[in-house]
Image (cartoon, rainbow, N blue to C red; front, side, top):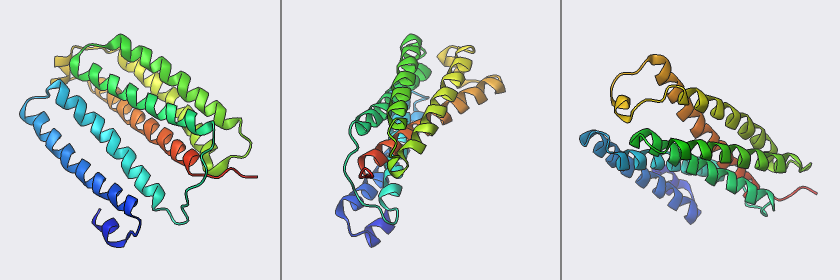
Length: 208
């Protein structure tokens, strides 16, 4: 953030750097409250939600700082579908955090997983049908479609080891822990990919 404030002339990019720094501070405070108060569900969910939002913000900063970046015309209707995929994945992550930290809401998380697959695959299909492949949007779509399939498989594997919320605070079989951790990591990668796809669709002029 300090480097951006020193070197970056665009005011809106400077505010992005300030926002990222502020998010890190807030994330640290939420992490402290999570430890002090023994994983309260609301704080733990907020901690996870902010982490994913911060991840997306750092991706946006990296994109706009890329040499040669220049905003273009939104690719309609691709932008709308890409944005819908990003928002759906983020909502599903919030449902997963609620499930993990409250011990309830499994049915909503499963329904959300189905909706997420439908939206991401529809968005990817819309992108792949565009022969122009502007600014690598198609490449992001391939990654998103692959990741959502892997995420769904990991989610089904995790669902076979459903445990009470209190057990998350104790020891678990290492296999269960690794499956859940890969599920979380893949979810973050899917969100990042959909968000990058949205940025590319929002800032690329269609090729003639």
